[in-house]
Length: 452
Image (tube, rainbow, N blue to C red; front, side, top):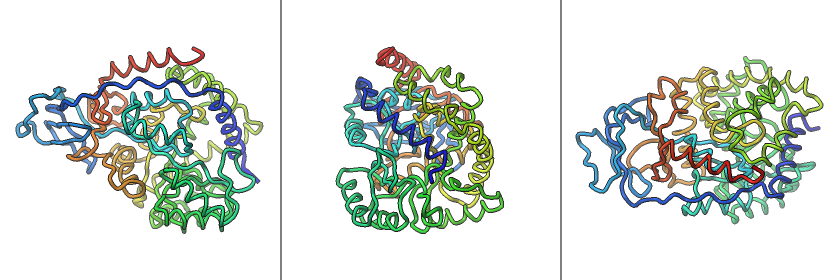
């Protein structure tokens, strides 16, 4: 039997599918011209995110999308052709990552960049995402670095938009097909049989594809950890069937670390559900709502938790889950399990880009240091991609040879994680975009949305 959470998710998915087929996509964003000139951040304090430290008074040189020089300002020669960005008193850190998004309409790409999110992972891919990934990589489109999982694999009865996988033979064929199509991972869902899940995991390993996503209900957490699933997203999947006592969390965290499984805590997802239960009108009045397509907002109006038939019981469970998930996040961090930020944007109540900043605050409120929270959105996200998806990927830290995906901040984010939301500008693939320019671009894109 499906849980209420699963039933709500099914309804949301079906409505989003309808939205996509009825023209939810917006017109392509114009691509800013990328100059061949170098860009130099001069006199900036660098937060490299390799360890918890700040490198004072540095000059960072970028050319052709990569960091080519970094060192004390007195020892770095700024190229004669460089665009100089005076960074004295400011802090330079890596761009952020969101490892659980659902790109329901294309205008959201700009929202991610405006909030300093330079890498995203769509965990329910489609041929459209593959085409968009290629366009972004070739700078034919404007937006963050994009990774995409396969469409989700589910058993019977499963989601209507899923790849139905009910036998070992289907599993082997489905994994190879997704590999040939070019997806970055295999996404698993709720109703897979344990035997079929095992074949999927083994075949994905053979094809060098990570398995990501949910915890199949018939196998449970033990099955997922035995298979060394690369990513569980969101972390609430550990507790989909039952809410354990807090005393059991340390052992579960140790088992997760031992399996090498990365976890998306997803605290912001619970927060969003509770926020809507308390004041759904306030969510729709959020300033970020104007940057979403009217089609997405209409879908939210039908899929938010106040529309559930079991709204009281659902709210009670979410309120109980919230402190449990915070405690589990602390346990995972203490045991050294890898955490990465993922928000489920733009599912209901979760605004693209902005939800990453909310999650960073949630991680600190749960007991992580600002550095540990930021690692989940930078260094550890880059390490996951390098380990499981693309060994050539170079993002998540500030160092020579890394991709030039950067944020310039007015103050030290290691002292207050909220400062990450005050970016003076963002660099994506070596293109420098001051805050004011990004805002003008967002406003223009919002006015052009169909239905406005």
